[in-house]
Image 1 (tube, rainbow, N blue to C red):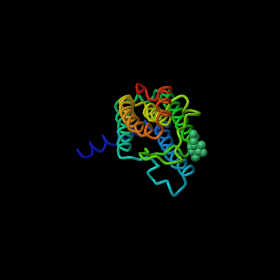
Image 2: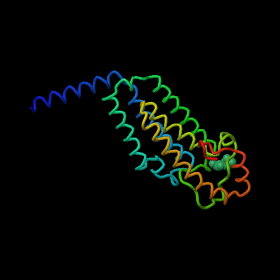
Image 3: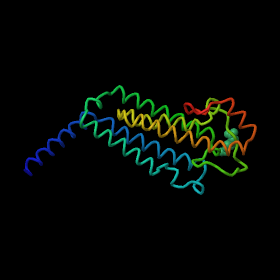
Image 4: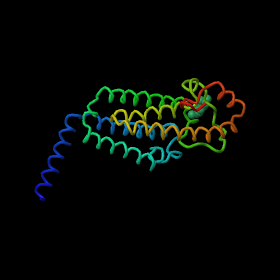
Length: 211
Ligand SMILES: *[C@@H]1O[C@H](CO)[C@@H](O)[C@H](O)[C@H]1NC(C)=O
């Protein structure tokens, strides 16, 4: 009885190990992408704002985020076991990798363009040196850093060929940014008045269906 269970677990384990060996790129790529994203967010904040203004919150790990990433890994594991053929679609993983690079590039370009006018938290009081940035990538969309993250986060799930989490992530991040933009822009209109209203009239938010 116990022997039988052990054999079963053993064969399941060897199937899993065999799977991991035949699909060596997805999981390592996923963890490398996460590592690059979080380290670079923190280092850029440190570089731009200095150590006295930056806290470890600039690594951008939240409870919700860790929960989402755990869901992604669970979906990957379940499907790798029950529908392994899904995970051998390397062309889809390649699209995911492309999305990761594009999203990361847009977000980091935005941060480097805005410099000290970009912060990880929304400012609700006006600082005298906070200027409205409308040049560079900000000429095309008002929230390039959100657009970049939106693309990047979907990319993490496309890389893993996770259909459920890809859709789930897009819904959750869309809702998050739609709410955040309306909250943030309330203050931006207070700080910059007509300058902001004109800018918002001219330039799209960058998040689909959010004017
Ligand atoms: C934003 O902040 C930086 C300081 O890091 C400043 O030099 C820059 O000119 C500011 N304004 C714009 C519109 O980029």
